[in-house]
Every structure is written in structure tokens, then in C-alpha cells.
Image 1: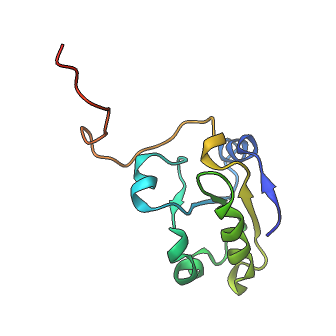
Image 2: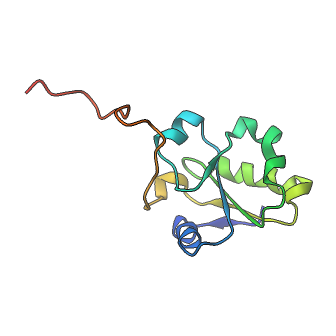
Image 3: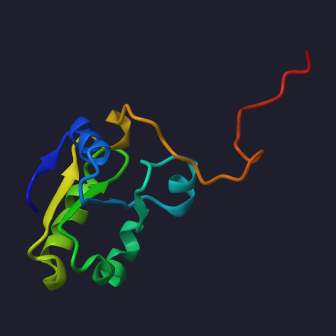
Length: 119
């Protein structure tokens, strides 16, 4: 692992069009509910089997809810032969610190907006 980036740094990389792959390690359901635009979902438990798909990336940033598990994911990714030359970082603070927009994959009308008021 090559360190941690602040959520602001990650947002700036994405806005600048940097060649970076943002890997969200949460469950598919959590990912669908809201994720960083253009990020990809690779759940942590699937990472050992799917890390090969990250081969050839120049820069990878891992993301999780609070920035703890993403450190472990970054270490795992960096240890893989196909990503050994990549810069692999974790987003500090996780999505709880992200202030940018989130994208959702939930079909229209399926978002849980809470109970309906009878009034």
C-alpha cells in the first residue's frame, strides 16, 4: 500500500480526469444505495478472486464506509503481482467523510425514503 488520500484528493483526481480506478469494497446492496461516481464494486470477500481484474491499472484507490477495511484491501491489492507497479491507496475516513455527489443504482421508485405520512 502506498498510503492514504483524503476524500478531497480523490474528488480532485476524478474531476481532473486522472487515470484512477476507485474500488468500493462494500456489499453490492450498499454500493447500489450510493457510491462515488465511476467507482467499481468489488466486495472485500471477493477481492482475492477478482484482484486479477485490476492488473495493469496505474493507480487504484480503495473505498469503504469508514476507511479501515479499505486499508486492508489496498494492502491485498498491492501484494498482487499484476498490481505491484500500481500506486495503491486507501481513501482516509471512507464514505462517511466523502462530501461529493453519490451515484445510485437503485431503479426509480425503489429508494427507501422512509414511512409515508397519512396526512
